[in-house]
Image 1 (cartoon, helix red, strand yellow):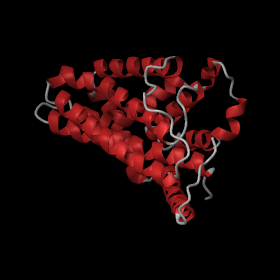
Image 2 (spheres, helix red, strand yellow):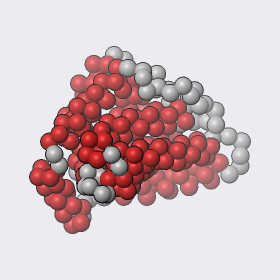
Image 3 (cartoon, one colour):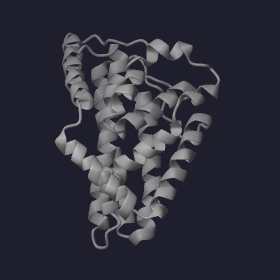
Length: 257
């Protein structure tokens, strides 16, 4: 997908600013886990195994598997908004930030509503939040000029989703797939058999582990409403930052570390 420069004299300066921002983001994303991160992972694993009800794990696993099928094989998430061509990166970023603000509010409101409804509604929040996240990513793709009518672009969104919620050990592998996407996309089969190249079981485990700690607090009586809004807002923000930077990389042709 070609990058469309606008006529503003400062657009080149803006691109340099974005490149520097991408460098900082990439270094932080790929840094080796420190003591705090490793300790948090141990605690998170214990919470995952000992505290979270099996019903929650079952819901997340079924939802993620259903998500993969609906995203890649269906068109239900493809937005009505057209794919945007011919505008500057600055304008795309502004539109993306506005979209992220909108979806953070939607996610927070949904989390507060289900969190106030007790355990049953809190569990129902897991699949609802995934739907919100995917709708955001699909609209984001169109803002940055990539049509989700192409299943390979929908597959790209799943990699972005994984990167946003993967462990630090898995991030380099996922990041390299995304970084080299446009170089390798020509080698991807036009047909959907390329799904066999993706470890979807790992996908659902990484996602479950990434959100467990924040979302588990939502199940605590009396805290559900507040924690639900906080957790959903933060999880959508995490996804938004990763998604925006992944599309910036595609438009600018990667980063130089």
